[in-house]
Image (cartoon, rainbow, N blue to C red):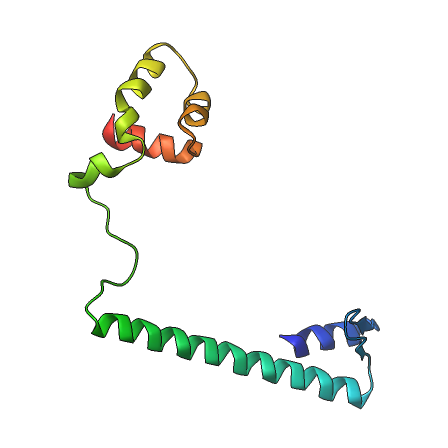
Length: 121
């Protein structure tokens, strides 16, 4: 990624200067070596993060923990934030209140309210 940015800058005759460390990347060989080193270290870091994540997930799976997002179900409606307010939402709708206002009062996003109303009301 860094090499691509550097090549793009060089083709446009731009210079990249980092303020914090005062690196100057231009069209000379030192800049190319520095950009390559930055790219290589970033790739190594991504691989290490990925490896640590995979190891942690494998360890949790071996311990018997369920991985991933909890599955939602219609049987668990009472756990939904809006389920406790369903009667109030129905009343507000009957009174002609806008869905935007209802969502604001329930402290949820409009799309969350729309989905709830479509599935449960």
